[in-house]
Image 1 (tube, one colour):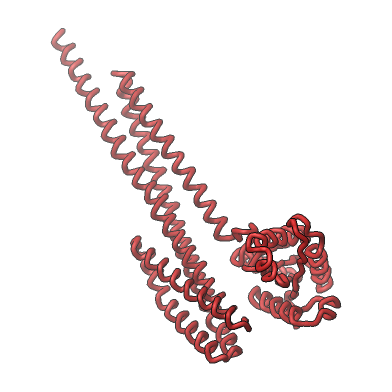
Image 2 (cartoon, rainbow, N blue to C red):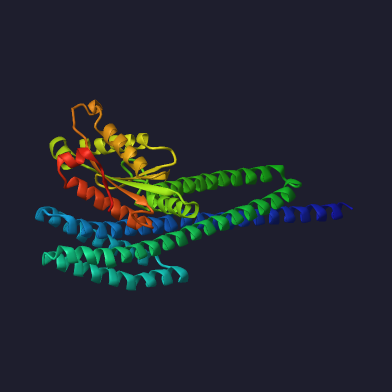
Length: 402
């Protein structure tokens, strides 16, 4: 009987050692696997998303600088835009090279390869535009920009957005796999722990304590990842200086407003706001004061419109306002007058009396365009007509698209 008891005790001891060994091996392997998955999420996928965002911003900067070259009258200003154009091209190339070095899945490789031909077409058209500008054939250059360069850039931006969405899906899938691994680790550890507790409470406690510490670390990494993804979404849709919507987010909102107006027979107004003599503020008071003025202008624009309207900064000293659900041109006129009065009010918060004014071009859906690009172009053209007009014309009325 004693021999049988010893046999049972020895067997239980062996089972205990096996359970402890199994618990340790399973926990270490699963936690290592989970750490690897988390590293993929935090480092590789976020790095790819950053590179795609950088490439998209650089590509937009390249087309935008080319467009500004076509509009600029000052040769020194054109040279500055040309330098920006070349620098943006370098950023696009370096971003794509960095993506290639990180490696692709088959789906990512197909998406990357599809962009190569489009990039060649964009570069060819952009070189034609540069050649036309060099030959001082400005009208032809602007026409080529509107017909080919800008639509090609929009297509390229859509492909980059799809690639970024693909990376985000992969990131979410990696998170799901990490959670599954975490669940398996927890269940396996709990099973081994419960069995081991019957033989040794101390060993079970120490093991569960170790796992709890690891789980807390994993949860912290997941929280950091969610914060990082939220920050990336904010940067991709909002202007860093003013916090206003950027061109991409504004286009989405305008497209939705147009669809709604088209369906229910409403109207949508666009105000293209371009600050007057902003370069003088930068030259006289410095760029820090210029940035402060832009921030103040953005606040006043938001205060002048309704919550249902939308204000965005397109870049530099250019802003655009969408007036949703208005009755007609009188509403646009009233909003433009309110904005002009707000911008011309007391500016003592800057510590120096500055004169702030803006040229405001207006366009109305569906009278001046049936899509977002046409409306913005019409409002932009109206703004330039107003900016180039006399002071009497500026005081008499705001320009509408015609």
